[in-house]
View (cartoon, helix red, strand yellow):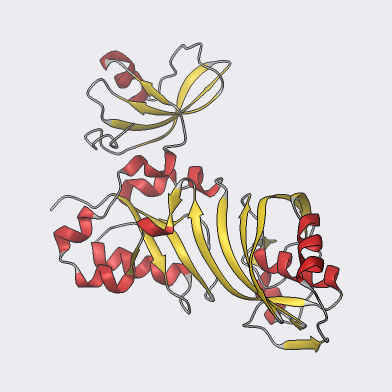
Length: 299
């Protein structure tokens, strides 16, 4: 049987790490390699695109994509992790109207400076921040610029509200929840999180682990998107036979293309990999180990 390569859109369940979910998918599909395109915390659910085989080479191009979440935020309670899995730090009474909440939410649109939380997988000096936190060590973290494209109130009842958040990569929804709570004067923490979309893919397209387990081997493979699914936002470039051979041999092509990344296909529509154009021409960035992978439909 041929090696498994492609992208599976997984609906990750609550209570499982992203890596545990990836390992289950890898085993169920019988793939040699597997990886995801953006960590979901164990308490978070929803869309987790999983790359298998050759597709793992192109995960970086979806990591850069904007994401959409639905979040449940609990007012009045703060925790040491900023979410429902942490230890309670403080309770403050909540006297917030919907009008006050809407006013505060409006302040958090656009570009924001966020400080990554200590309980996160971001690495400092080769160690994830959560490892320092578990050891009782506080590490200095620089703020970084993120962008909130949309922050829409969905529902608000007493001390709990739901929002939909469309944001740039690297946005910590836990930090956003805490900051909103402080702006309201009562504190808050993230009590639920669902990723609804990333890079043009939506949760409605995803399959759960239980549904995947119920399928036979061939039906599981039929759920896979093509290898280039992580890179479909990139423009396409067709190469003739000579150009395809040169690219696969590590040679640079002369081109007047605008600088940036391109999906590369041979004359038969087979996906070769991703190249980058610049002042010195077009060079391969990542290539498939084989050139006989089919082109994605609609590209």
